[in-house]
Amino acid sequence: MSERAPFLRHALPGWTVARRHAVPPAMVERATARRTAGDWRGACAEARFDVHVDLADIRDRHGADLAGRVEDDLLHLVPDLVRWHLPREHSGGLGRVLPNLPVTLARYDGGPALWVRTPVHLERPLRPQLRFGALDPALDAVRTERWDGARYLWDARATDGLRHRLGDQRRAGIDDRVAFHHRDGRPLTADALPTSAPGPDDPVALLEWVLLLLDAERFDEAWTAAGVASDLTDGETSWWVLRRRLVQLNATVPALAAAARHLLATDPPATWTGTGRASFALRPTTWHTTLVVTARDGHAGPELTGALVSRETADSATVLPRVTWQRFPDLDLLRTGRLARDGLHPLVRSALFPDEKDTGRFATGATTAAPATVPVRCRGTWHRVGWRDGHVDPHDHAPDETRREQTMRSLGGVVPRCFTVTETWRAPTATRLPRRLRELRRDGLAMIVNGDTDAFVRLLDAGVDPAGIRDRRRRTPLHLAAHLDSADLVRRLVAAGLDVNGGDAVGRTPLCSVLFDGGSAPLVRALLDAGADPARTDDLGCSALHLLRSPDAATILPWLLDAGLGLEHADEYGRTPLMAQVIAMAPPGTVRAMLNAGADPRASDEYSDLSIAELIDPNSYDDLDFLRVAAGDGND
Image (cartoon, rainbow, N blue to C red; front, top):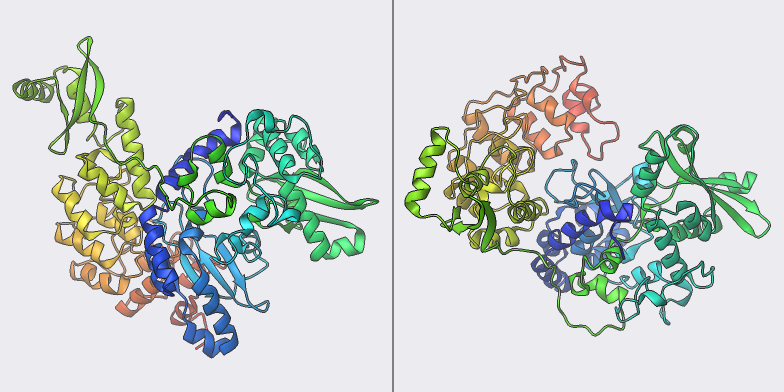
C-alpha cells in the first residue's frame, strides 16, 4: 500500500525509529531473563525504568492482601513491553514518548493504582517511572491513559488479548486474526482485501475497509462504514486544519464505536440513563476544537455521531481511554513493509500471529554500519569520501593535496567539494551534506534519543566520527549523554575530540545538558573529571544548579557547591535554582537535596511575584508537601 496516506506519511518515520531503537533486542533478552527468574526489580532496571514502589510501605498502609496482589502484578509485569507500547508523538521523525503521562496499569479496590509516569519533558531520556499510589480520576490525562482494562499491553499472562482487541473478540481463541494478515503472519493479497463495506458480521474485514478509506482521506465514508454518522466541520475552522486534526487523532473508528457502545452497556454516564444521550471525547481537549462522539438512544440501540466541537462542549464529555480507539502502529508498519515480523517484540509477535512457527528471532533491523564510502561530485567527476582514523576523509585526494587545500580554506580560498564535506560533517551549524551522510547523522541521533547505547557504540566501533552526530540545536552526543547513561562512553567521546565545554544553540555545555536531562552521578563525575567547567551558565543566565534535575542530586550537589556555585544565584528572570527546579517539575529528591543544602524556600519569583509554594504545579504527580511546609505554606 502507499505511504502517501496523510497519517502514515507523518507517523511512520517516527514509529520506524522507535521500533528499531527504543526497545533493542539485548534489552528484551536481559529483562526477560530477570523477569522469568522472579526478579521484577531487575527486569525494570534492564528496561531502564526507575522504580518508586515499596511493597513494605504498601503492606503497612493498605494491608497484606493488597500488597500481595500488587506483588503478583509486579511479578508478571513486562517493563520492556510497556516501553514498546507507550504513546509516542506522530511527527518529528524520532518516535519520542509523549511526556508527563500517568499510565494506569492496575487499580485496586477503586483506590490506589500501579502506574507508570512518562518523562516530564518530550526531550528527556526515556526512563519511565513505575509508581504506586493515588491518581485523581477526574483528570483528563488519567482517564485517557488507562491500561487497567488492557492488560495485554503489560501483563505477561494476558498478551493474547492484543489479538482479540485488534480482531474479532467474538471469535477469540478460535480462528481470530488481525487486519491485513493471516494467523500465521502471512499478509493478505490485494484481491483478498474488501472492496466494499463488509458489514458488522466480519469486524476484521470492516476494520480493513475503514483503514483503507482513511488512508484515501475518505473520512466521512470511513465513519459511516463503521456505524458512526459524522459532522466533521465546525463552521469556523478551515478544512485543511480539520483534516490535520483528524489525521493526528489516528482513530480506528470501528474500535471507537465499539468502545462507546461497550461503555454504554457496562458503565453508562449518568446522562445516558437520565436523558438517553451521552458524549465521549477521544482525548483531553488541547485544541480549540476536538472530536466528540455523541450517543443517542435509538430503536435498534445507541446511534452514534462524531463531530468536531468546541473545547467548552468537550469538557463535559466522558473521556475514552486512548488504547480503546487508537490505531495500532505495528499493523501499519507491517503492511507498509517498514517492519518485518521478526522486528516485533516477541510477545507482540506471538499474540498477533499464533499459528506462526516460533523462530526465537528478534531483530529490529537497526542500522549500525557506516557506509564504507560516500560519492561526492568534485571537479566535474565523482569522488569518494569515507572514514579514516575516526574522521571523514577524501579517498581520492593525496595527503599532501589535502593539507594544501586545508591551508587554502583557512586563507578564505575556494576548495573542492570533497574537502568541504569533510569539514561540514564536524561543523557546529547546519550545512548541507551528501544524502548518505545525512541519513547516518539521523540514524545516530535516533539511537541516542531512544537510548540504544549498544547500537551507538557499534556505530563508533565502525569508525564514525561522533562530532557529526548533532541535532538542530547543535547538541553533540556529549550534550545528550544522559540518554545513553554510560560514563565510559563519555570518556570515549572526549577522547574522540568532542568539546567538553562546547555550547549548544542556547549556550548550554554538555554538563548543563546532562544535569537538565537528569543524568546520573557517575555520568556527571565523568564530565567533571574530563574538564567540564561547572561555573558556565547558558544564554539565559541559568547555572548548573538551575538545571539540576538528577535523582542523584544529593551526590552531585556538593560537587557543584565546592566549585563555587551559589544556591541563591538568580538567572535573567530573577529565579533562584530552587524556583527553576520547582517550575520545571524536578524530581522531589532534587528539591529535597536543595533544601538540605540550605536553599531558601521562602524566596519569591521576581518575574511573577509568586512564592515557591505557589509555583508548584497543582496537577503535579509528585508529593511536594515537604516543600510547602518548609516554605511556611503547609502544616507540620
